[in-house]
Length: 262
View 1: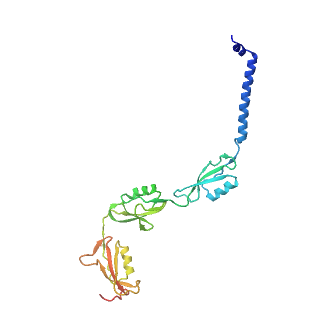
View 2 (view 1 turned 90 degrees about the horizontal axis):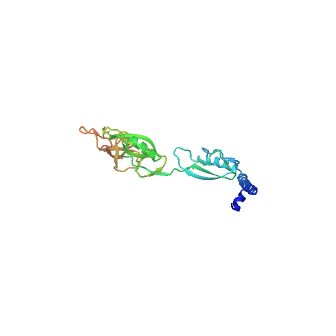
View 3 (view 1 turned 30 degrees about the vertical axis):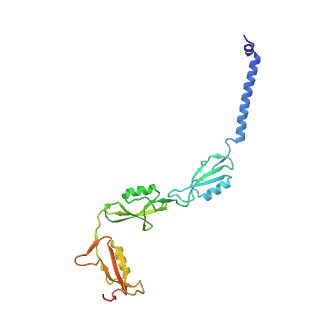
């Protein structure tokens, strides 16, 4: 048997082996507890609940408790501007002093959105499409057209708007829809010897369109004029016109029932 093999069987080897193992265990345990003490494991300050608070209030709380913070922003429909949406770390997490808390806040400025073309769509399809773009449906207006419940026109703040126009996210759009009844016809009103303002009101409320207004003679007060001629006008052979027909008017200076004869 070799000398090394004989040595392995001696008491001195066993003692040395135990000493080496004990030393390793002591070193490992010392390193573990030292690291735990150094990092203050299990100690710290709980992160406050900040979600839903206005950012100014959230910042005051973080400053009072000795936290730093960084803020990012995002736009969320129907959420109050300036409200905290997300925080990292989560509420209740124990962290060290001066830890940076990351906040996501609802931006106060809505980003612009390019308006999609809704004219090929039905009302239901238009509502779903607008929702995907972060937009809403406002009023619905029906007009004679055989395409029932199909979008004929889009309006924003009362005025027609074209597809591709950029508007703030979250805006409301009014939709003009077909009623499925075709063009339809209305009676031709008689505007002769009527005030211009009165005629405009009747035209707009009877499905007609104001055409050209011709001022005849000297006009010194545009608010006091009467109609002396209209095209088209009601006759025995033509008493109705299609919805949307343009009515052209000729006016002169004067008052209702006091207009000079033609």
